[in-house]
Amino acid sequence: MKNILSIQSHVVYGYAGNKSATFPMQLLGIDVWALNTVQFSNHTQYGKWTGMVIPKEQIGEIVQGIDNIGELHQCDAVLSGYIGSAEQVEEIIKAFHKVKERNPKAIYLCDPVMGHPDKGCIVADGVKEGLIKTAMAQADIITPNVVELRELSGLAVENFEQAIEAVKVILSKGPKKVLVKHLSRVGKDATQFEMLLANEEGIWHISRPLHDFSKEPVGVGDLTAGLFLANLLNGKSDVEAFEHTANAVNDVMETTHNAGVYELQTIASREWIVKPKSQYKAVKIG
Image 1 (cartoon, helix red, strand yellow):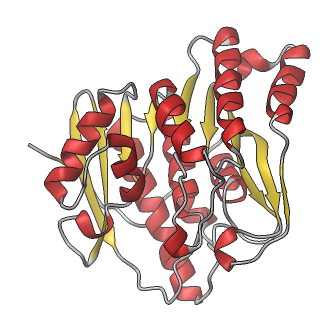
Image 2 (cartoon, rainbow, N blue to C red):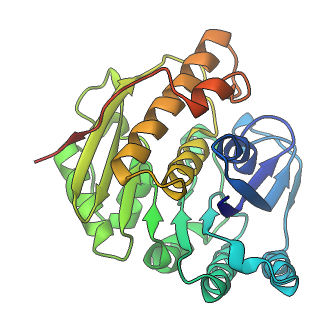
């Protein structure tokens, strides 16, 4: 069994952060060590929430506690997502370095959640800068959306060709794999939900249906990053992991859309997370 230390947010109600990613990764046979950066009543896109940011010291203390009982060497990957404060960025990198000391084969996936004020996704001051200056260079895998793609690459990504250039720039900055979770309006077809995967062997593009929600569900990126990492740890190739992730997420989105609800229906979709109904294929570019 593979083990992932998943350092991201937790919501008591609904699905975002660890609440969105943990169960799907467990369905794929991964043991998830969930370490929460915040504990909120609900995700921030409701516009109001209660709860607290976890003190940055807790990250190092928890990791040290696992090391103290001699189990840290069993950690195969670190996943970071929504970060509660700028100080937590450095603590997460320290945590990954400690894991790497105990298991040199361990990898780090950084889901660089930078916030989207227009959608009500709020992150603390300094988090974006920490992700760009510190986390990106340390990550083996990074999973930006198109807004984060611009920030990480420093390029004005306004069309598909520029998105391709941006992922190449990010690959030059340290990560070995870049998964763009959603190309949004810079994709090839505005009627589709499009993603990119880039590694040293090339770049792949996949399209799936774009479901029309009156209010877009939250936690889709967290689900995407978690499934991609779980698939890789299970031995799938990069492209196989990419395809499974895109298809499983599509099935979750379809189930959620059909239910007519706001929160992701991961439990109702559990069968499709393991074995997706959808069978969309990635196409290599160039």
